[in-house]
Each structure stands twice: as structure tokens, then as C-alpha cells.
Length: 408
Image 1 (spheres, rainbow, N blue to C red):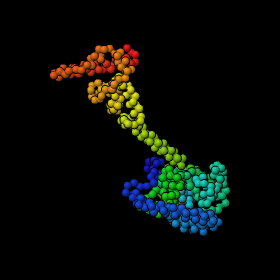
Image 2: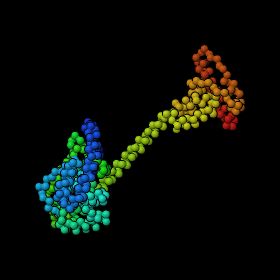
Image 3: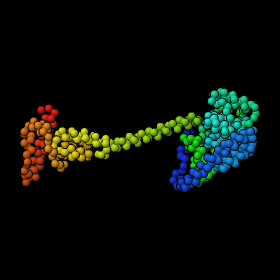
Image 4: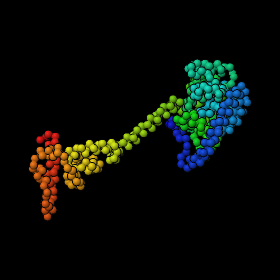
């Protein structure tokens, strides 16, 4: 098998497509009410976990019942007895460690993934991870050396779909000078309510909501045999071998991708999505520029500027007529040509005294040539006469423009 694309390790969609979405939509009102009820029941579970911390066996029984009410069902296959002080498991949901702790009496190290208060209430143990890796490892080594409860480690460091491949294991569980025992965890939901356990960029609160929303989520825990480290085996080789054993049990592959690579993928996809939005906005603006509405504010302002230029050349043409034609042509010369060729019907405006004075400066020849013409019966002569009048009107307009701007 070739290298696995990192994007294949994670689910991008929370819900299925097409007809498979219909049952979820029908169930939605019921699921919403169920989720609200379970929120209140979850407080009972948290309080029970806190009060029964000193009675772990009873705590596990009570929590198992309460979590079943919350829709979290846990089954196990512990044919291979837990016999190591260091347990490692794959990571597919936010509740993996809690589900395993209902079956295996173990310690769950806190690693900043949740708040101090929440971790304390849920039974996590603080080994001072925030003080640095070295201090964290020293505290863990001291605890493991005491041969008390086994330590449950999640070396992937990030949630995957659990259906394609494992992330590369972090080395800290393998530096505790103990042989490691893998634990495989799988989870499923009713096929008719195929809501994904976790998506690539989902938060723990959204994942928790969907746990409470669906009728139930089934976890299955299976303990594997202890994997002993060879005398001449390096830590990296040992990590790869343990990772391979767990991947084989889950019927998936291994990769060299890390939790940091997942973070980079999320950032990359976010930037790509932002770029797609920007490109779509640019395309929309360009399309509006090519065929804008003549009534939009931006276009109206532009047309008014063009209309002023036409008005300077043809002051006797009403502004409204000019704007209407510019709304179609978007071109000063084209509109002037349309007016001079008689393609636009209009009633000439009376020129104010200033404009009349300006026109008086125009050579009389251009104005006199605009006298009323009689049409010949011959089509060629009529066409010739029309062309002559057209040129005379253009010349008259040009002369008025030059006179107004003192170019004569």
C-alpha cells in the first residue's frame, strides 16, 4: 500500500449525504430533547465520579450505569489480562479514556486537553505536564515505579476517524522503562443515525453534544498482549512495533503523520476555504462591473460623470436622455453618435444665456449648415445628404466644445 493522504485519516463531514440524512432530520426534535435531558443527568454522573473516587470499583459500576443512560454503552474483551504498568490506546473520540476506565482500573494523565476543574472531576491525575516534558516524565516514572494502577496513555495526541490509519505515536509512554500493553478501542452508532463521532476541526463541546443527541454510542474495548522491548531494540523501533500491533488489530495502517501535521492540515484547509471565498467575491464584483445595474449607486455616479461629458458636447440634449443611453452603451462616443445619427428621440432643451453666448462664438458656417433640409426622391442623394448633415452636426458639436474651453 502506498503512502496514505493525511486528509483520509479524518472525517470532514458530520452528517451523511442524500437520503441517509432523512432519518436524522426526522429524529432531530427527539434528539434535541434527549440531549437537553442528558445534560442534567450528566451532572449526576460527574458528582458520582467525584464522590466515589475513594471507591474505584463502586465508582466504575455507578458510572457505567449513568453513562448508559447518557447513551454511552461500553463492552469489552479482556481475554488478555492487564499485566503492564503502561497502557497505550488509539484515539477516536473525546471519551476514549473514560470508556476504557470503566473497564480497566487505571490512571488517566492530564495533558492540558481539558480544564483543571473538569479533569479533576472526571478523575484525571495531574503529573505536572505544564512544567515541561522532562518533569512530566520524571513524575510518571516515579508513579509507575510504585507499581500502583497502570497509566493509560494516548500517544497519538489527536483524534482520528479510526478507519484508515494511526498517527505516529509520541515517545513519552515508551520512555517510562516499562513494557507496553496496547488496548484497541472502537466506537459505532446506529446505522440509521450515522452521525460522525468527530470531525477534523470539531470542538470537544460539539462532539459531546452529538454523543448526547444520538440514541447511543457503542464502545468496544479489547486488551492485547504486552509487547516486550527487545534488548537491542531502539525506542523508535519499539514504538513502530507497538503501533503496528495495534494497527493490525484495528485492521488499519500506520503513518508518520503527527498531531502537529493535523493542526497544519486544519490551517491549510481553512486558508484554502478563505481563498475560495475571496475568489468568489472577486468573480462576483467583476461580473457586476461587466454588467452592472444602471440603478446601482456606484454605476449611477459613473454614468453621471459620463453624462456631463456628453452634455458638454451636446448641451441641447436632455440629461435624462443621455443617462438612459449611457446605461446601455457605457461609452461617451457611442452615445454622442447615437444622438447625432437620430437613433434617439428627444425634445431639445432651451439653452441658457451662457451657453447661447458660447454658441455665438462658433463659426456661422457650421450653424447655418444645420438648416432644414429637403429630402431628394433619389435614395443615393438622400444618403449623401444624411451623411453631410451628420458631419455638419459633429463639426458643430466640436466647435461648441472648443469654444467653451477657449480652444478657438
